[in-house]
Image 1 (tube, rainbow, N blue to C red):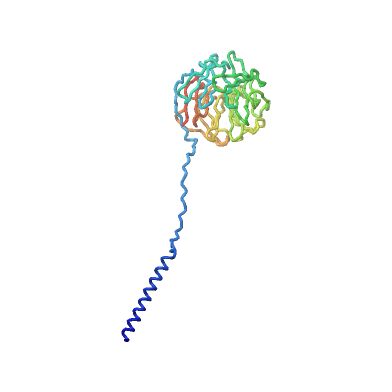
Image 2 (spheres, rainbow, N blue to C red):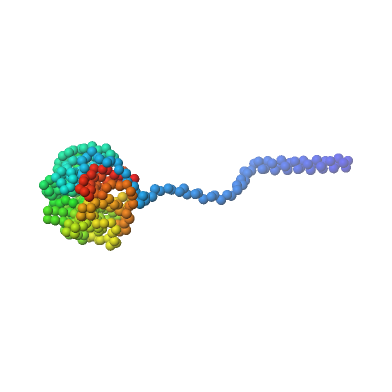
Length: 355
């Protein structure tokens, strides 16, 4: 009897254990399991390095894309970029000292290699030492000198490079050649040049190319012709130019915030005095290319500056020959150079492109 009692107790004990296990199992199944995740410290995202093409002005190189363009050799022409094409206007052919072969032709190119003659006789007539620019989405042709050394003060415009309209026959400023122009403060500006009375240093502006205001009759910079003007860092600048009485060209740099009040850059300018040169803004740098020393010597040097005060010379072997009255402009994010007159008086029709 005692054995049976003992066995019963053992059976009851094991049954209790079994029930407890079943109870725990059911309880565990009915509860949402607690997820334990290892706390991992997220590694900071590594910033992808953005590779930027930083322009190095000292690395600028040149390639000749045409030795002889289809348009006749010339200098004192103008060239502008309009509607994604290059437009070449006027100038003088032959070789110095012959200035009789003055052009009234217009040529156009989509790449600087292939050229089409638009007309051989534009209505603005033969002219050289004039100026052309883009303003109000039009091409403008201003002043210059025509056959018989007759100076001009007319203004023409075109909306397509094909048809031309004379908007001013006789502007209030004196007829002139070798002056500088720029588009600044939403106006066309005319600066200096030479008239039948001699060299001048007046400044004129126009909001529409038709009505002109004389900003100053005598700017702070000395009278000169074949100077160059450009807009850079929100200011209007002029450089160089010729003063025949000095028998040498100027090498000064001036700037203005309003076209009337001018300040001279005080630093020593390392490039030689020159006229008939190019002055342009490209890739946030100021550039001076070529020109003439005012006494028969041409240049093919290239200088650049980040502020108009400190200048560095570009060292590159292949480039165009020394010349004055060349045309320089920005096309497809590169500088293009064409035409001009060499030191020996020969005029040119080659085309060069920076890369």
